[in-house]
Image 1 (cartoon, rainbow over the protein chains, first blue to last red):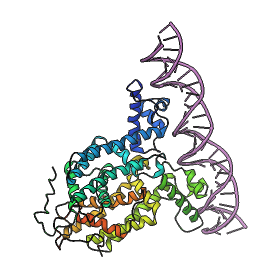
Image 2 (image 1 turned 90 degrees about the vertical axis):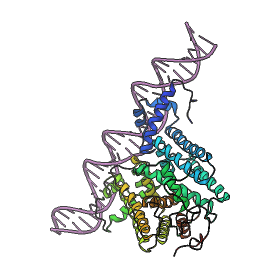
Image 3 (image 1 turned 180 degrees about the vertical axis):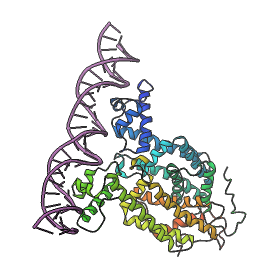
Image 4 (image 1 turned 120 degrees about the vertical axis):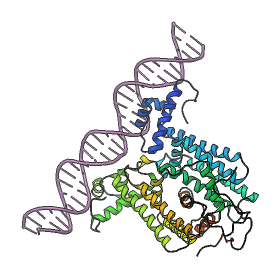
Length: 219
Length: 219
DNA sequence: AATTTTACCTACCGTTCGGTAGGTTTATGG
DNA sequence: CCATAAACCTACCGAACGGTAGGTAAAATT
């Protein structure tokens, strides 16, 4: 994407400043509402300096979004790989996402705005949809395997199982971006997974085999 | 918001043309990426004609978004009022949302883009966050009452129950806006509510009292 | 009939947009 | 010691932006 190889020479600092400033602005104002002038002013570099490191505005944006989406994906994948049962996996994924969210507010916001924005809001011909689908596929694979292992209910197909979990997970993070509600930590993650697995309906009989503790679950 | 009272006189047709063109453009390109010139060209009116009917760009946008958000809210409220049990209510709400989505693609897209967009992407000082919260509150009230009636599991608090359902509901519609997956009809709504109520986990014993039919449920 | 209001029109305003032409400094390799 | 490329700089470009000044034809009001 960028014109230069990213060796840590002189220009690397300038490049980093640009990326940092652009990230904050793109994340908070979106692509179209962020001007090159704002970016270079905020980064305290000149306009040709920016155009030396990036082909054009969409190239700069693209570099940031790809980083955001790829990092999120890796985070999820690594979290899922650390455990084998579905409850542990989903909790680990959710905890990792929450953690990443707290540490990288702007990258998360950027990932979500571009994923859910209007199609023309963002430079066209980019393959962000594929990267968004990829995250869903990851969850899909997880639940599919879990169904095969008998951990999840066979009466639901794996697509709707994946949608159900992804929907809840993304919605929690998304609402947190707009309004701060209660803390998103691993306890919250465990509770969310619990609701997803156990269901919202009141249980008629709390048989020993079906019982669970809402407040402290998973490894 | 608008300068004129909206009596159906001569100018009403022009106003409607502007609104229709603006809706399509805002929904597909977002606020910042849509220019006044594009709108008036698409609506086949002159620029002062637009500025006669709307104070400025944000006023025009505001009129559309408020319509979109208010309509969605009314739809949900009416659907929920038609039944009394939580399964029926959630299914009705979801079915109504799916139906509205199919009939008003652009309005739905507009509602979602503005609800989930970056804060600066949209003209500031608007109270869209309140209107988004309102929808969540509606679900919250529904599940809270259901918990009180003993229909939902008391071990979950009502906030997370509301988040869980809203998350799934919104995510289904959102993904449909990006990529067409399987049909969003009342059958899909029933299945989603089913997953939400029954939970994803495999049931250890399918006792008569706990059994359910995934494929055909609710009233 | 005179006057006011509605509902626009053509033409244009200043600003900002993304992007560049062309020169300059600094590190690097021969 | 010189050439070459990297890493910028000042100054500027045409186009598009949101918005308006000032005039006008037709309808409504007095």
